[in-house]
Length: 182
Image (cartoon, rainbow, N blue to C red; front, side, top):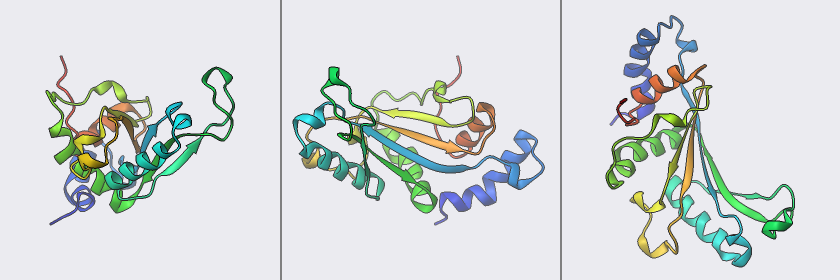
């Protein structure tokens, strides 16, 4: 079975180059990394084991050990001190990135109830796309026994595209199901 990366190189890249009018293969947009971020916030101050649970769940989903993100400054209103854990994140590149994207597109997103496509408004102006996932249980790898609470996270697809038009063309070619324009 061909991986998504091989399919991109052999089939999708030539189509993308003609669609965007690009002559050089190196100038064509490509996916460089996927960053998955889960914010826990004030909940982590009440129970320190929550960070471990979220790390375990995100590790099962991504196949890579998540990194704990810490507060950069103290905010007394939220009872937050500098250095307190506030979330976890994972950066995927290479084979793991394409494996995660395949599972996201073919298994996880179709499990979302009343799914009509992902919104087009998640682009940042430079071709990168951020998608919010409402619950971690849409991934088949997560067993219901390990879920203590439904948590959402965000998935950022970082590309080499120069603008949103190129980013949309790339992500559509990779199989992301965007909602139809009205």
